Length: 236
Image (cartoon, rainbow, N blue to C red; front, side):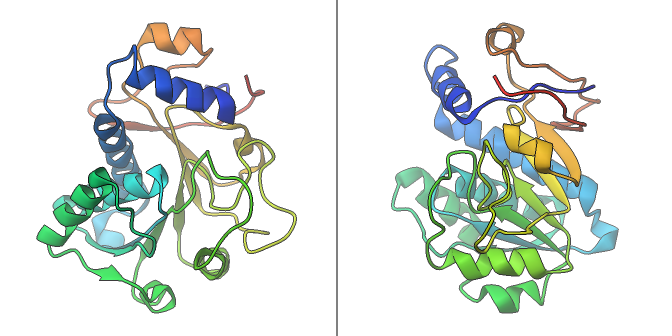
């Protein structure tokens, strides 16, 4: 089933509505997002293909999704390592970080070395709200993601991509094409440039909210929080 996409402006409006009239807290939405990411990893990288998962987290909500995913992956039996160089002082992110440290999940500051010691990478650096210049220390990290032969799952957007116009013409993200992408809540316009496997995590939207924003609700199987989907169509 081809799914319609949601522009950055509409995605931000939908998030705000979910947290107001939808009565979701940001903690709930981040937990649902991170759970979806962890299930996509499970489908892409079964435990028998390698348990080591490197989760690269940015300073915002996308990074928070990565922290939640790392916790779930630990409980599935994986061995996550977290790269989180710009740790937020926000209480929510500090709690997510403490939950991982209580599980003895290692944090690393050495991304190049961590890449050499993992089986799969989660790119949770920049999400749909990213714009402007990639700032340190992330240019070299995104270059490493572009150059690695390891499978990479990007969360909501391959980091450095523009949500509306896709991959950059220059800079560290030029030619960055991860193996897989998980769109959260709804696909964004950048998916028209994406060539890998595409998953959707959004099994919490009400039919009324989906109708208001012109979104398609795909069929999820069993207990799955993610579904693999093709994408075609224009943005709202």
